[in-house]
Length: 167
Image (tube, rainbow, N blue to C red; front, side, top):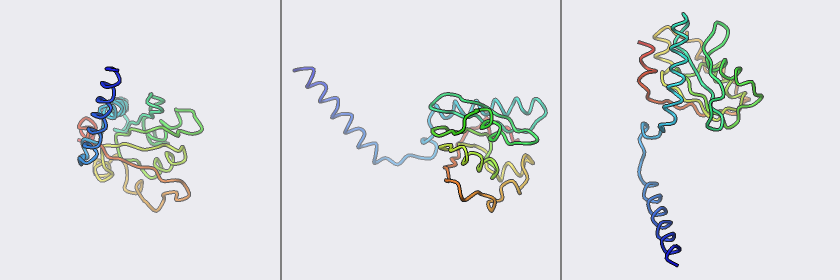
């Protein structure tokens, strides 16, 4: 009987605390979990390696069902997001998230939509990417978005190591 009472009290406490938290407004920074930061750190590492090898500061990782699926660097023929999608070697990336150092170009965004990715997380905005000379302004021409595909969320994170790559 005592176990049932303790269980009921604990369940009630969880319900009350969940209800209270639902009324608290969460800031942009608090919406990013520590796990998201770990995945972004991996994308930053990929970008750093790309720079060390003479490439541009672009890196991305694909996370499928909470596990690293693939990573990719920008090449002359593809963005880091496109490369990471290709390296995943799957027909669809439903339930996957992509963590990329830079805001996805329209070409990369379309590729992620085709792969049915759930979301793309990034740090550096297109304005900063263009200003740093990493991508041309034409790469972000929104008139080239494939409107026949289902749109996916693109979420900006604050992660200083990624920001430092453009300085």
